[in-house]
Image 1 (spheres, rainbow, N blue to C red):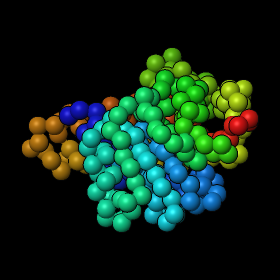
Image 2 (cartoon, rainbow, N blue to C red):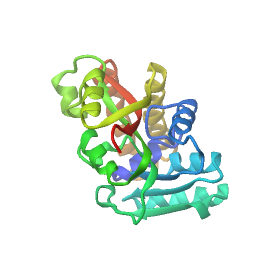
Image 3 (cartoon, helix red, strand yellow):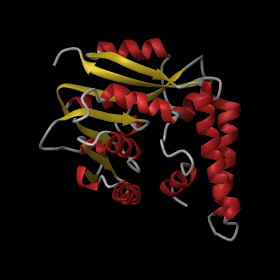
Image 4 (spheres, rainbow, N blue to C red):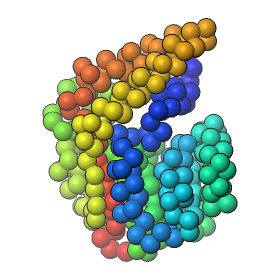
Amino acid sequence: MDREEISRHAHADHPIAAPLDDESVRRLLERGLPRGDERVLDLGCGGGEWLLRALNTYPRLRAEGVDISEGSLARALREARRLGVEDRLVLHREDAAGFTAPHAFDLVLCVGSTHAFGGLLPTLDAVREHLAPGGRVLVGDGFWEREPSAETVEMLGDLADLPTTLDRVVADGWTPVHGHISTRRELDDYEWAWTGSLASWALDHRADPDSSQALETATVHRDEWLRGYRDTFGFVCLVLRPTRD
């Protein structure tokens, strides 16, 4: 079972691939889309859940998504057809870091996919190239709530605490106009959904040759979360505007 297949099963009960509940997603989209007729781009869109929710809420919206996963994009298209929004959605199968478009976007999203660009600040550098004058960015990334162990840093990468993260974003030429820090409940719900959905799939498909791998992956992930990063990892979403257009 490859990484994409693991992720698909793990997110079966939590299609937003980040520790956010439905109300938090709604509020973030509301802050990122003040008019409701914007052109939106999601870099690393996966199954397109952010775009689908935006399109379903704002009937004048147009959206584009970029991802390397053919399966995820196919699922996004099927759901767009089910919702009747496929005429306002364009999907691109390519590396988000190399994506170019003939037009700019009023909102650019990258939530939980900053690793595709090498971190938060490189992500913002890439996003800036796609942003229309007066546009906004919705970005989501991790931070340290308290000092991590060396093992946790090795596992999750070289993050910073929240004040330092915001300082770096501001120094890079961005002004936060809204933000959301994932609650303990959102963080725990996401991890329980990830590990539980994957484990349930394995138990429901015991004859599948990938079942034992899926169950082991869920078990290891749960142990890493509970014994490793549960008390140190946080997640923040920021709605940003360029300090100078």
